[in-house]
Image 1 (spheres, rainbow, N blue to C red):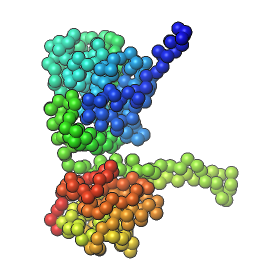
Image 2 (cartoon, rainbow, N blue to C red; image 1 turned 180 degrees about the horizontal axis):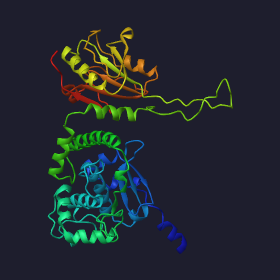
Image 3 (cartoon, rainbow, N blue to C red; image 1 turned 90 degrees about the horizontal axis):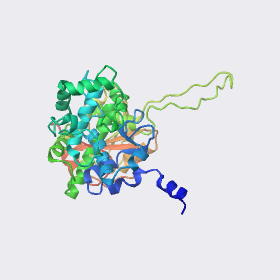
Image 4 (cartoon, one colour; image 1 turned 135 degrees about the horizontal axis):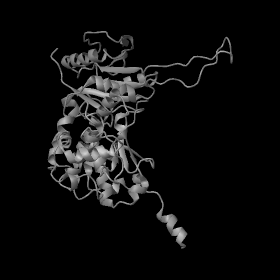
Length: 409
């Protein structure tokens, strides 16, 4: 083999996606979280970055393949964990205190994360207890490090030099000279609504990752304090406003505008046709079977009254069949009382077939989950039930299940 051929082989770009499973083999929680985050190479950044995609509200990770190729496996795994910690600690979705300098906050978040990755990261990374941060105690929160950084004259003076007179100016990207190896520049590029949707998506991802870790009886290197923070967060009450935004935003055809103009029938090719912008059409099927108690129906309608502040939706009562004569549109802003129109058995295929045959973008099923698993839905589907039924469902599903508290009828 010639030297030139050897060089070409050595210069093959590093494909992170081919190595993630191996790198996180001993990290069940991080591995489960990683599967829910898209990753793609980007040579426009010096190292790595995690952010919210403003178009999809999905979390995404960029990495520079040439930089990753020069790391050891331990360092690569540590960089992945560092990026995922930014998500776990909500640094990406707006935890930064109002009015605080972005660069100083960036340093504070890295110091908080890197405390948990001592001896694993590439040389030169920001680390409490080392170099210019020798007096900083490890394992503090980002807010605590932020306060200390603002009072640290050495840091402020050095930061002014890099920012040409203003503390915190500049991107702070890349290892050389500043110790902050990942980019945080994309954190400020999404609106608050998109961040809230992303937070709901993250909460769901954390829940699934924690369930997988609990089943395997291993959280890897996640410390107990962080584990408690994760479990506390995913056990919180559901904010329906955020859930609906999340659901509508991620519905298959929600809020899309046709890119093909209709031909004007009266003046073809002279005057343009109209673009059609449609709003997401949401179907909500309410289980009226005998196993669903009146108190559960009261709870369902209480949640729907909250949803009606945000959007129109079509209500579909069902038991073993859909009560088609009772289907109606619940208009935005309307308030309705609970009602029972059926009291038979339960078949989830009935509402699924009804929705599949029509032009709905999303389908929410309010039920006790006590029936066989239904056929696949053509649009995005999620389920709402009591905490008890969510914990012990009749069938297993990868679709989202929202628990609620039943009310007294």
